[in-house]
Image 1 (cartoon, rainbow, N blue to C red):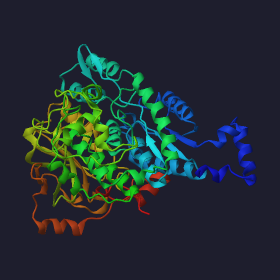
Image 2: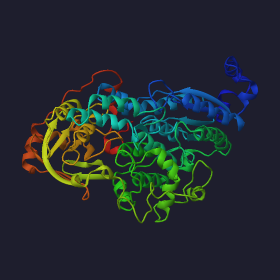
Image 3: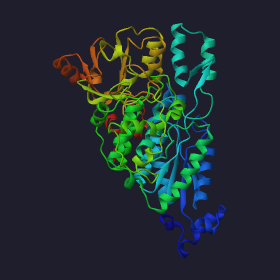
Image 4: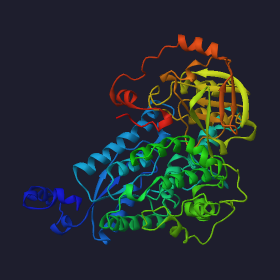
Length: 553
């Protein structure tokens, strides 16, 4: 066993003595030692119950003859970090989480790992570590939050963000916003729509690194705890059979995950996280692959924020396997791909007996013929930009508008909420990329304000930053190269015309090349916003959003 490095032979008597100091018996030490990476804390609703999930995982490990050993990682709540300097730390935390799991599993050579995340950067960070370490591993998340209710109307966290804009627009009263605040988040779990956390939990299942149900079983359901026990039992089998992530998960597995991403209409943040995970797995995923798979993958599910359904609805309708079962009908899924269940995807799909076609449309009657995400290119984004096309109003799919330029998210949010943005404007927020932010802030406050003020069919937003999974509308992010790297978005001036063509996959600044060259010659880098601490080091090492914002070696 890998753990023999710290427990076997007379020379490891001091090591065993330290285990015994914590109450471990010799029998427990002799068993497979399973690291339980638990991101429980008391600041994230999606994580507040992970102590109980961990107890269920540990029970499963013990039932299967292993010894569970729990350790913790950090975690950021994107909703609470939103719209202040805390958001700069969110994406950057992904690398710290990956590093911390690596440190723990190398300093204490566990035989296997169960990863217990539930929210935005924690999920990809832990999966990145699993591929980097390449020891038997699987993911079991804490599950999605149920939708809240205002009267009979289902609501979620995004309803509250949009309510702020509606209050500013005068379409709701303060007591309405208070009611939303009290009702939108009814309990533990990752926020209830197809936002980033739930997107990544669903994709971990589609990738083959989590058991069926991981992405959709509600946090408060007893089935979630049964799943956790099954995960604990399964990891011991993976260890005994030496089934490692890089042995199981191949490029076809990643293509399956991207296909499910497109069918579900997942968060644009998946275009950061999936390439970053692939990087750790030894694959290079070009952004063009997202367009290639999107072109042949229909959009089957209309989930919040773009549609009426929540994760609890998707779970009841057949879950991720139900979506894959539909996609398999048109050959959009690689059925031979292996999974941590010990079976192929095709074998797993045999368990699907019912799919609710109200929630998961049949492939011959999709919401859209193409997938939920599109990558746009043009002189404004030579290396690409990302949009959740399934959440864009038809009126905004092709639009030319007047640039309104802001150097920070806060300035743009203030302008929108004060009524300074008018129909036909294209809000440009720059110097918010991985380096320039630093940390590539999510722009949920301005995008939710646009929707809340009824401008979603009239105003677009373009940024080198990124968006919450809860964003809807013509919100185009990850513009690369970013402004801090001298990308064309740094050259946009107030009043310039910008052409958006989402079906044509184009994003163009309608300024002649001679003028752009003159502006380029006059451009000078801005001084760093942060000059010390982790963010300063992160800004020096982080790469482009087009490559997943991974750190350079």
